[in-house]
Length: 404
Ligand code: PMP
Image (cartoon, rainbow, N blue to C red; front, side, top):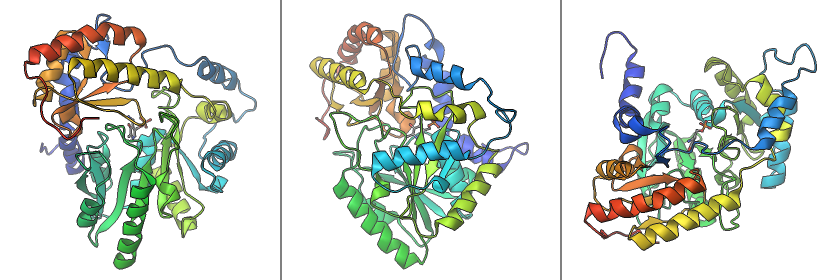
């Protein structure tokens, strides 16, 4: 897109998000979302009433306790202390209160980090299939986006490919584990190799390559797994988190950036992050959410029930003939489209009242994504539609490396 009326930067952003925009405006989902007859698996949005504990916390903390209750808030010391204490307990690393920066979700955590660290023309690596907005955010903060594909067989990081993409201009790499959309949790062996690679490349370059660790789903993990955080493996890391997934409240925006105590030179980074928070539009969570944090930190959606829905869908869809990758975490299930044209296949599903996200939208052509936030009755209703669409696609199983 080009226009004299708007900035070149935002024009590039509009181009980068064009596939998502198209889905929002032209898909069956755009036409039918909200229709009570459809089962909506397209996004990680709540399909049930919010957690009672969440509603109670907002009610309780909305009552002002002093005249400054709703005054300007930035990184409120009490809120940062709650986050640091929770991280110390969950991660076993001595996170400090001063290293917590409160943001409007992971979205702003990524924006603020890039704003603080990236020089014009610096390269920022991200892994594809990616979350929708990495490329656009990198462009916004003057970086050059560099894509690296995951291993197509097992969705693990391809460390050799990352090594091949690093240059002397590489400033950062964004890693998202558990991964949206693949559901993969990168194992310690991979994270060790990544850390070794980034350490030697940083030394060679004479400046740090930062690891932006997007941990939006770090508390949505299945089968009793431990979550290995990339931050524990590589000191020049920024831990980026949002409460939106754990609480399933993405419209109430709160998250954070945490610097690990192992990070060198973090006094300078602290100052840069604070300046970036201010300059990206006072990107602090609103006062009410900050006050409520002590009550929100321990709350979570029912992970066992998410896992139950995962297992239920995996079982049924496989019986119908779909090929799937079983997610280790996140809200998402990636299934192969029986036909290569995943957009057409999701339109076919929609004709059976089932709404899913075409893989093309997240750079995963030939797949479609199913959100496990759908409620039980939606799943029940959708199963015949999934079966009918598979039959009508008329293709049966395609060959693929992804069979488990
Ligand atoms: N990163 C990933 C991987 C996500 O899936 C999302 C939300 N879908 C975000 C970042 C942004 O999270 P939030 O909207 O809570 O800021």
